[in-house]
Length: 164
Image (cartoon, rainbow, N blue to C red; front, side, top):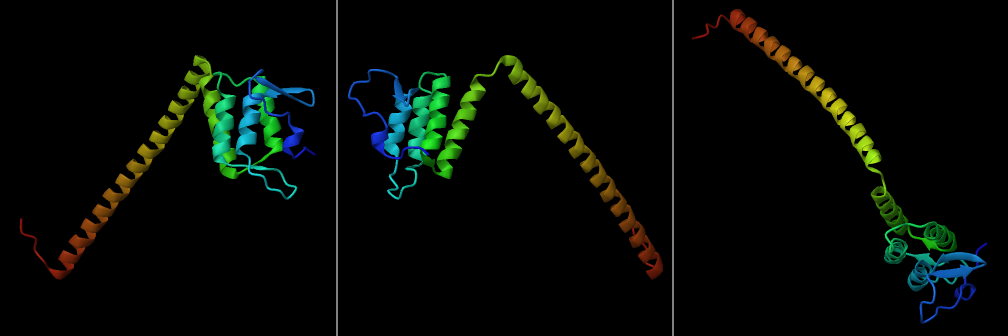
């Protein structure tokens, strides 16, 4: 299991000597670790400390501070996800922000390919819609013709003359 006490993490230093925090010989992003520690809610029941949306926002802000999501930041995120318990909303927020950020790193070819796929999907949906409308129009025209025939038959039966 993972150590649960703050004492298991290196002490906070007043000066930011390094961008990294070394825990059990592994290099992690110090800002992300500090954001998690600052925003954790201690459960005091032997369970993992909780982090809510506000903490998740702080962690993500630290993770994406350099304009890149580095392998160290990814490793730190994995460590934090295992070390702390994140609320459902916090998890959704982090996943959404990371996906949004990942989207910014796509190549023009990937974006164009995705857009082309979307355009094909829209065209297929529009064609399906057009056929549905055409079918509905045919149904309405048939119903109008049927109604007209019934009305004509009723008038004939009742001997009603239509003024023109």
